[in-house]
Every structure is written in C-alpha cells, then in structure tokens.
Amino acid sequence: MKSQKISFYKCLAIVAFILFCDQFLKLYIKLNFPLTIYGQDPIFDLGWFKLLFIENKGMAMGARLNNLITFLDEDSAKLILTFVRIFACIGIGFYLKSIIKNKGSQLLIFCFCLILAGAIGNLIDSVFYGVIFSSSYGQVATLFPEVGYSSLFYGSVVDMIQFPLATWIWPNWLPYLGGREYTFFEYVFNFADSYISTGIILLL
Image 1 (tube, rainbow, N blue to C red):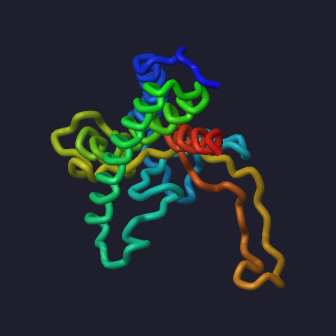
Image 2 (image 1 turned 135 degrees about the vertical axis):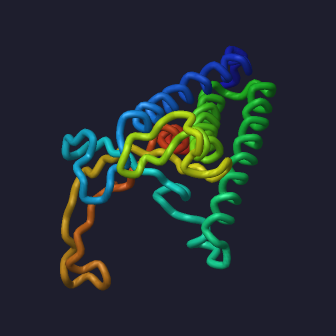
Image 3 (image 1 turned 30 degrees about the vertical axis):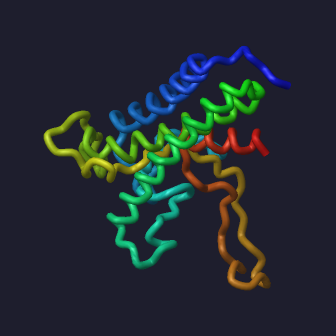
C-alpha cells in the first residue's frame, strides 16, 4: 500500500527521537559507571537481563575488521570501519529520501528510519566519543576533558544490554564443542544495534 502521510521532515523527527534515546542511554552509562571488567558484577542483573558497560572497537558482536583482513593493523582497520559507517549513513539517508519521494509504504519508510538512526548512533560513538570523553577504564569518564581517550574517528561504540537467556554445556561427544559451556545470546549490544536489527527483520 502506498502512502503520502509520511513526509521527509516527519521521518527526520522519528530518526531524531530514537537517536536521542540511543545517545541518552550511552551518555548516562558513560558518565555514571566505569567499564565492566570481565568477572565483575553487572551494573544491573536479573539473570536473563543484564546491564553492563563495555566499549566495542569493532563491528557487531565484537568482530574486528583486522581479524577478517589480516594485513590491516588495528588503527587502520578502525579508521576504515568508521569511514564505511559514514558512507553507509549517507547512502541510507539518500535511499530513505528516495523512498519518501516515490511514496513508498509506511512500513518500508519506518524500517529505513530505524536502520538510519541505528547507523548514525554508532557512528557518533566512533567519530566523537574518543575526543569528548576521558577513559572509562577503572573510573567514571568525564565529558570534554583536556585530552580524550582516543582521537577523532577512533572512538569505541558503547554497548550495555545483554540477554543471556540460557546456559548449557555441550555433550562430550560433539566434536570441538563437547564439554564447553555455552550461553545463548551472550552478546552485549545497544539501542542502535537493536534499531538496525529490528529494521532488517521487518524488511525481511
């Protein structure tokens, strides 16, 4: 079904609102808690839901570009990833504008609003957070320090949400995995990640 009800400015308002929610939570975490070191208690723990604070220098689920392209050093991989995010945001923005201009369905437009907001949310972390925040390792970060924890374009993405729904030990007869403990969905993510994932799932 085609729709003329959603204008480009309404889409910008949607993107701005859900982007604000992402950045508000990240700023709250950064300015109130130190990094959650492995083995430490979470900030909040319900068992099946945990609130943590980790910083992700790579992509989704902690994957790093230099692990996939082995001849890249960590700094080069981080810089390339940041610029890929920049071009992705620009491309998604232009595509969203095209969908609106061609009167695409409301659901399609909403999906790309979610994806764009998520992409911008993580891009802000990557571009600016290294400059505007001090280190969070063993201490609570300060905003606008004299020297940030990293350089422009080299910031880390703030992740904090985890849903470790179930943990089990694989049977010993399984090759490679046998006897190992496994936690279903132990990955830590943020609102921006969930926007992108939700948008893609709705598209599919």
